[in-house]
Length: 597
Image (cartoon, rainbow, N blue to C red; front, side):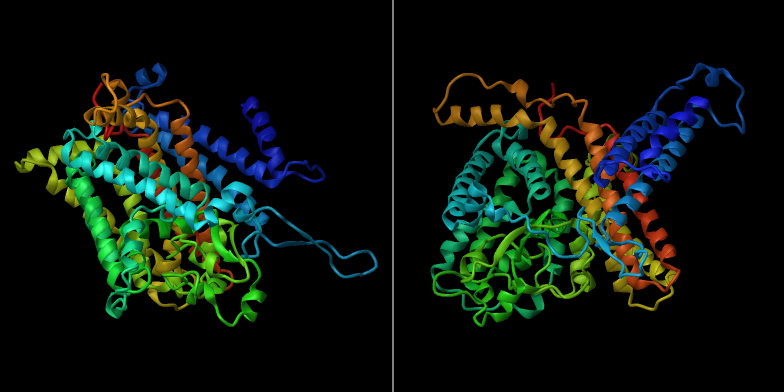
């Protein structure tokens, strides 16, 4: 116990910095320091919780208290260490980041009673304005992102790849791991999409191959119609997302190259027909479920298109960024750049960049918290977190992250199989439907409004239910993005090599190559030692950012002195969802889209 005391004092000393000591480390080093410690605590506690036999013989053979078994006692100890231990690390991390996000730090007045001086804290910003890290200023990458020709070349390459996927999906083998339509869309494309969102932003919409036939259709000059007013909401996209998530799980779309090919064909037809007859980017803004996924997740992305100098826009009379001009179209989704915040409805088409006569648009970096904490009017989007349709979209994607990942875990699959046998069914469609609909529709529709409304009631202010619900959903978005990242990363890492034999087989069919494909690469790979710790670290970072955002959003909805009640309820909600995500990560996973070894 003396060892525990001494080591714990040494561990927490640089974090607490008792007077008069100090250290030269920046705050972000302490954040990483505590997060790594939390990963160690999580792995250790999870081992205790899920170990199938008693670890210590002393307790296995000793007397029992209260009738509890040694294994249940051990699991309870692991759960206590897990929850309480993670809170001991994550709460100080949140405190450090909240302190670092303050724009200034007041210093005591001088001995002569002079004005109080201030010192800026540069870490993470805190003003709510984007930082000046303009990606367009990068010599090679910036020029490629700005160039319409470079974007078109990337789109054409991906279009040809999509055509190859469709042909192979319709004519190739039915085994998904042997077909391009079984491995490229569900394993590689989804994995690279979330990596792109995490590292930069909405790169997929920038390179979207569906835009090639859509832009060709625009050249016919038939787009005279305006999108119907009654469809100018996200409700259609919400319905399509629910149908897609249901079909993916219950119909096993990931295991059907034929269905995958027809989904891609349907996308090309829908994008071409809708944008051929309707003005602007109607398909992208109001219909495309994939686009809605990227719009919502880009609220957590590190970069966004913003104006460099607002005074230049104030003096501009033409507003070419939204109206267009003789050389370039304006924004097809109706986003007014000076008032734009975040990536909602922004397809990174760069039409506004090419239309701006003042070169006043930058692809700037900014903190995740700044966009999610922004609750005022956003150009072309309105008050995002007050819109019922947008809230429903975000709630479906938030819940879908966990339900979609849980659907491939051993316990959930075993429960579905058991229910199928009990009811005398031929397939698991009914149990799977229950899981998906309950998880992404019923539970969020009940729990999120109740928790959002209860939080504002505890805060002592009378506000509409959608306000509290919207703030809660906005705060939980980083945690949802972390779960999507963890899920897609798992598939990408464990089945990364599956594209090689599938491509070799497809080229053999065209007499381009010869030889036998190395189907061993199509088998699921062993989990690398670093994968689970990285997944847990990502989930920890997600819940940490969510807690920070919830703390900021709870303030305006509460009376003085009651902020802690609202924040406490909402942060406990985030921790409960985080615990569910950790449980999912630690379960045996179904290796989808791979060959059995």
